[in-house]
Length: 630
Ligand code: BF8
Ligand code: SF4
Image (tube, rainbow, N blue to C red; front, side, top):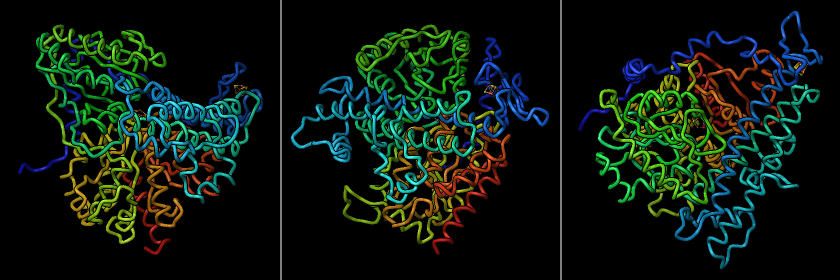
C-alpha cells in the first residue's frame, strides 16, 4: 500500500513557478504580477469610507472631513457600501438560480435536459402544495419551473423555502423584520435604500443586508441547488481527482469554468460520445479530457466525477500548461485576464453567456433551447485546435490527489444512517450524526467555504485550518474553492482520516468517508442551511445552539458577503479571514460582530491571523458544547 501524503502549498507554488516560466517565454501576464502593481491598496477603499454613489462626490471620510457633501457620516457610507456589496452577491447567485429554473422549463423526455431526479421534484412540489398525483413528470417540471421563477417577483408573501427552517428561526426572522420577500425585490430594495439621499442609519442598512442575504440562501441559491439536482441528479459519493495533473497531455483538454451547470453538463455529455471521441482521435489526440475550475467544476465533479483542475487563483495556470485546447466559461469568477493570456497560447477562450462577455474571447452563445448543438460546436472546435498546440510550451505539473466528493445532505444522511441502521431507510435522519456530536466523538462541524484571495497565501488558510480542525475531531463540510483547496491537498482522500483526532478517525472508518466532505459549489451552501435545519429539528435545539460554525478564510467576492449574511442570519457564527471593508465604522463593524446577535443569535468574527481564527472557531464550538452540557 502506498503511503498517503498531502500535497503541500509549497508544492503548489513550485508548480506555479514552473508554469510562470513558460508564461515568461511567451510574454504572458499573471495575477502574481498585477497584484504588485495594485498594492498597497487604497486605504479609503479598504476601510469602506469612500462614497461615489452620486456625482457630487466622490467623498472620502477623514478626521478633517467627517461628512460627505450631502452630510452623510462614515457609518452611513460604510453601511451603504456593505449593503451594496451584499446586493451584488445576492443578485449574482439568485440570477444563476433563475437560469436553472428556466432550464427546468426546457426539460423534456429524450431532450437535451431531462428530469434526472423525479423523486426530488415530487418532494419539492408537495412541499409547495402543488398537486402531483397522476401528473406527467414533465408537466410537473414545467409547472414548477414557472412557480420557481415567480418566486423572483411574487407580489405578496415571503420565500417559499423559509418553511424548511426550524420554527424558532422563522420566528426570529419575523421578529427582526428580515424575512425575504420576492428574491428580486430584496436586491432592488437594497439598491433603492442605498441611493443618494436614502438610508444612512447603520442598523437599517445591516438589517437589509441580512434580509438580502436570506433572499439568496433561502431563495435564489436554494432554487439553483434544488432544481439543479432535479435536472442533473442529486449528488452521491463519487471518486474523482484534483489538481493540474488531471489534465492529460495526450488528449484534447477542455476546461469548464464558471458556475452554471447547464453548459458544463452538456459539454460533458457531448464529449463522452463516441462521435466526439473519434473526432478527437482523427485530430491526432488519444481522447478528450474534461476538467474544471471554480464552481462549475464542483458541479460536474459532484455529479459525474469530472476531475477538478483547480480553483479560483489557479485559473490562469490551466492555460499556462500549454495543453488547454479550450477554456469554456459560463458566468462568474472568470478572470478577464484569460482573454489576453489565451492569445499567448493556442488556447481558445470561449465565452457563452450574455451575462459574461469579455474581450479576446470567442463568443458562442449558449441557451437551454440549443444546448446540445452548441455544446457539440464547442467540443469540435476544441478537438480541431489540438493540432495547433506548441509541444515546446507544454508542461503539466504531475500533481494530483484522489478525492471522494458528492456529499449532498441526502448522501450524508444515507451514509451515516447506513452505519447505525442495518436497514437503510430512504427517509433517514441526521440522528446518527447528532449522536456522534453529543457523545463527543465528533466535537462539532465547520462549514468551510469561499474563495482564494491574493491577500492570503493561496489555499494555505483553507488547508491549515482544515488540518487543525480535523485533528481536533471537528468534521468539515466544504464547498466552492475551499472544497477544491482541500481536494488538491488530499484532504478529500479517505486516507486523510489518519490526520484526524481519534474520534473523527473512527467515524471516517465506520462510515467510509473522508474527514472533509465536499458539498458542492457556492450556491450549494444552501445545502448547509438545510443540514443545519435538519440537525436542529432532529435534536430539538435551535440552530444557534449547535456546535457548528461557518468560515470563509480566503474570501474575495460579493457573493461571499451575501453568503456570510445568510449564514449568520440563519444562526451560525461565521469567521472571516479577510475584512469586508467595514473597519472604517465602529458602528457597522460593531453591528456585524456583535449587534446582529440580538436579532439572529449569531454574528461575524474577523481575524486575519489564520491560526488564531482556527483557535477562535474551536473555542466557539467548545463554548456551545459547554452551554449544552455535552
Ligand atoms: O462561487 S468560492 S472564487 S468560484 S465566489 Fe468564485 Fe469564490 Fe470560488 Fe464559486 Ni464562490
Ligand atoms: Fe458624497 Fe453624499 Fe454623494 Fe456619497 S451620496 S458621493 S457622501 S455627496
